[in-house]
Amino acid sequence: MIVDETEIPAMVRALVAEIAAKVETLANHGQSDTLDLRGLPLLPRDYALLKTLLGTGEVTATITALGPTRIHETRYPGVWWVTYCNESEEVVGEIIEITACPGLLISDNAEIRAGVARLRDAFSSLSSTSRPAISIPSTISNGIRKPGRQRLKVRVSLKRRVGRWRTGSRSGMA
Image 1 (cartoon, rainbow, N blue to C red):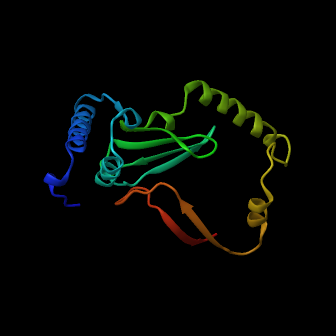
Image 2: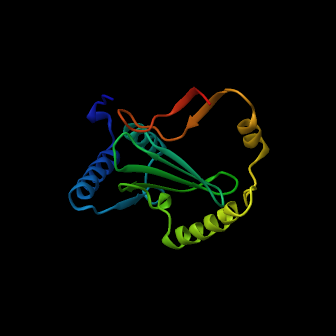
């Protein structure tokens, strides 16, 4: 994207310079940081310009808890735009997180341990019975049990280019 710097307001230039400095610190020292966009005196046009300048990168995620939280990598690795919404999907917070991976996407160790216990419990009966301890939704199990080959469509939410994840529909044979 080519933009005439003279048309970029001082506030946006200052934010981009601050983001660049924070990304450099992340790259050189591993130090993450955040910028609270709701706490800044941004005019609507400044906000829109900043969002356009940073763009959208290759990774997006949505977390659904007490309202959706949308996270997307900007076109600059290590710079993440995080939007928090309430149950009515009104924006209640917005930050730029400078990090290798946003904190909301990192599982807590206590949750991981609890998940291991649930996983072991769910599959503990597999060795003693022929039926799994968990139920598979009929839409999935019906597809699994159909005889012969069938066409599958898969939508991947993460995308990466050149040997990394890609997004889009992909057809294949099962």
